[in-house]
Each structure stands twice: as C-alpha cells, then as structure tokens.
Image 1 (cartoon, rainbow, N blue to C red):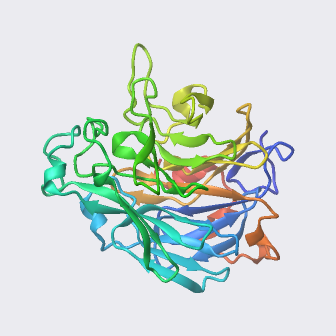
Image 2: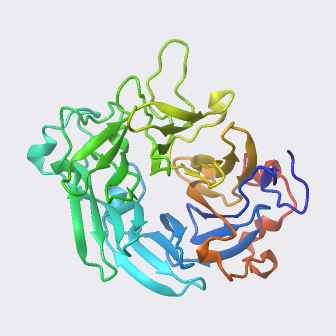
Image 3: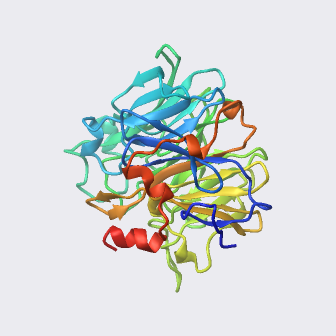
Length: 394
C-alpha cells in the first residue's frame, strides 16, 4: 500500500496489520549518527558518536548502544574489501561513554555475549609458508606481498582475552579456495560474527564464499556451506542462527556462477537447514535484478515470522512476510559522495526492536523531542525521493 501523511516521505510502503511494528536502528555509512526510527520513518532517538561507523551499532538490552567506530588512520586502508573499524564503544541512552575497546585490526563485526564478554572480529597476517599454499584469487594481488586472514577474540569487560582463534590455523588450502575474481590480499575475509547458544561461532568467509561454524571447544570448522556449484553462494553477509535451528543469510549474489540464460546480478535472502543442507525459504524479487546489493547488507527474522531485509548498497530497508509480501519499506535519506560509487546512501545493517524490548523500557520515544541539525532535517522535508536524488545530481 502507498502510505500517506503523517508518514515521512522516506516510508514508501506500510501495512500496519501485517508488519512487525516497532523501532528500526540504522547508521548511515558516513557521518556519525545512529538513528532509531518509528514505523512512520520518523526519528525517535539518535546518538551522535565521535567516530564514523565501522560499520554499525546495535541496541543492548540495557538500552545502551554498542557501536563500532572507524579509525581512519588504521591499517584497513591498505586492504581491499572495506569494513574497517578499530574502536568499540558502548554508550548509554544519552551518549555517555560506558565502555571502550581499541583494536586497530578490528573490522566488520562484533557480538555482545550473554556472559558480558564481547566477541571481536579482526585480521592478522598469514605466515608466508602458509600463504604460499593458498589456492585461488587473482595472481600477484597480495598486499605488498602479504596475505591476511581473520581472527576471533573473546574479550572480557576489562579488555582481557578469554579465547582466540586464527583462521589460517584451521582453514584447509585444499578446500577453502579464494574466489578466482578476488584479490589474494585476504585469505578468509570474514564479514560477520555471531555467537551461537552453545558458544560456537557462526561466520561468513567472503573471499571463500563460505558460511562456516567454528567449534569453540576444538577450533575446528565443523560445518561449511556455500562454495559448491550446487549451493552457489555469492559473497554473502550476516548469517544468523534462527530459533528453529536454521541459518538466515543475505546472499549478495556478487560473483555467483551463472549458467544458461541466467544472470548473477541479483540478491536473495536464504533460510538454510544446516542438517539437510537444503534451502527451506528464499526471498528474491521479481524480476530478480530489481533487488541487488553487491556488498554490505543483512537480514533479521522478526518475532512474527516476517523478515527485515537491509539492501545496504541502496540504503533500503524492507519487511516481508513468510509469503514474501512487502509490508514496510524505508529509504535512507542520508547520502554521501564516494569515489568508487558516487552518491550513495549505503547502510551496513538495520535492526528492528519491538516496543516491549527491554532496552526501550520507560524511554521517551517521541519524534517531536528529537532535535535535528540543519543538514539532518531532510527527515522532515516534504519532497519525493526523486526530487532528493535530483538535488544530488542524478
């Protein structure tokens, strides 16, 4: 349904009787503001952070924001693939610093665990003798002759290391092969970090086009999915474990194998049964190429069975039912100029929180109380998306 006022001009669709009504958190990929919006697309709270996102934030049950900031002077600028971070911050509802952890090689993702520790994703240089055995990738594309891989590190609130895992010690060069179109500067290139209830780590190794489960007790990779011709994953993002034991993942579709008259330039969201290895649910658009984000992005299964999808390259968040009906859509109004993509409203991920979420208890969520800077008042401008794009030179 086409929405009418009082909804913001950035909400394109909203079916209140079918959507999982709540509040959506997102962080534009430039600037330094994390926004919490209502179903009408109006900001009800925001946090202005001291660093631009590296690359997103999440709301904790205590109402604090856990946010990765990007250290622009860090080592990530020399490597392909983006996702640079380096600083984890926890701030309270009013933006006051509660906790900080600095790791210059942190990138892409993090996870606050039930025991209060935080799992951090970072990168580490691969020993030369191991790098020489790694197959795949474009020859000669190492970073100044070096190859990097990922580590996972569980840290306590005091910043002490409780557990650590290095990808190059557990990947198999005969099985874990870099995509032939990717550079050889990164072996694994993980872009996600999800800690399962039993402590195992669920991730996606982007360079390998593989979803993996790491056995925390042994360090072994106990399950892989995506790299085979039949599974055909295309540089995915954000695998998460669902309550039914299945895995939800945003399959970007980049470098997907194409046969016959098909085409690889489309994204899809998959629900995979890890036991049968079968896809039990899939969302893709009609025509498929109308839904495509070749990088970033994610998906969240909501409590009513709907799925919130972040088509990150285009700053588009939309909610679909199990029958794949779109029941809510929002387009981020925050654009910035990038050398590689031009004007973009890119967002790494978005998260929906219900009104009874513990972290929102007794919080004032009134759009009239949110003060916006002059630049950020686009949220209230009465103009169409087409007019906004026109202002940006499209």
